[in-house]
Length: 461
Image (tube, rainbow, N blue to C red; front, side):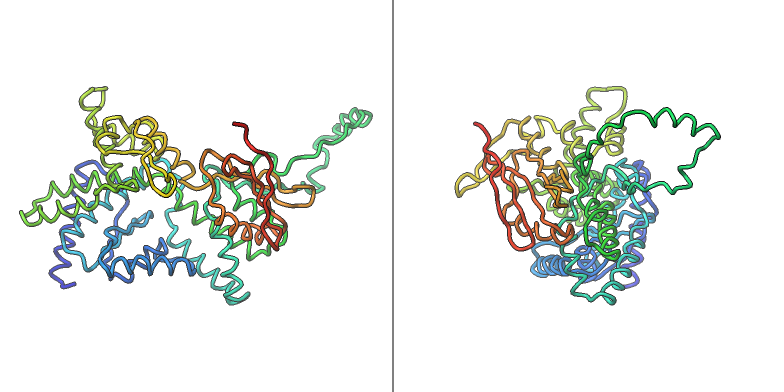
């Protein structure tokens, strides 16, 4: 890019930042980088500028790059949730395209900084991932690249099965003998009363005591034959998924917030007639509806606009603008949709539920409340199956019993049967998974050699 174009871009960044601050956006210090397409799509595939190497990231890169080469799609924005916040601009973009991206990412940074679900985010994850990548390279050198990649295949196949809502529980430790010494000279006297009491049989404790959602952590802590380097890899992958999780559970809000603000910031700039037309075309592409999926940019923006309009009209003691800043701070996608998606918006956006009936996809529901709840249901656990560890010592043989918390969404059976061997690799003993298929509760088992199925019960109709 020529020096003159860089100066124009730097000027645009300053103007957009000033305008964003006038609107009340509160963001991290911003760092912008111009990148060629290959670099940008590498970052997009890996999710970060620095991350460990795995074939699945390469697969994602070639898919993104092919779509770009054939002009089927392009990454307009790439921003890293960090402090300072890094945003990457495509050097092939026009000045106005980059202006839109700049306005968009300033709003993203505001969201990252202020939404409560990001409160515990590791803002230095770029550096952390670089350290992870180095450790994994060292394991590849020590144990063999193929051995490490096979293990990573297993961990990444299960990476979404975590519990982001609590801290890691440290394994209980036995007290050293010296910690069990009497605290006072009289403690032994008090303990004499207990010695003559009849001892009741000790009830065998369930393992785990309660169903455990964090499968990855459970396998890391209790896998029978894992070596230290393998437990370390699980811990690193889990830490990275925890970093990305708030972005998964606020995608509609986050993109809607950024879209809402890029419209207002760009319109506040002094655009030429030609730039105004170009911006209108670009924005229409961003918010174009889809027949088969939700466009988070469109849906999120429309809900924020609806909230602002309703609060202004109803005069609830705060302006609509104040209300959307409050919503931005407190909600995630589930509460955002459930609390603020209205009947009018469902009708305006022509939202509906559909499913495959026979060989055809058909609309099955247009009632706005059922549509809203249908959208919410698909957002639970960020859309991933909710699976818990029921028993880590099933049949008294150390086997693993998992249960799918079924809520009218069946598991993909071929995918399930391909995934169980990965769980077996990490656990080290036979694994079982209970789920519901076509109204029948079935137990899937993998014993290290083959998959099998057992009907547990048929639901009564």
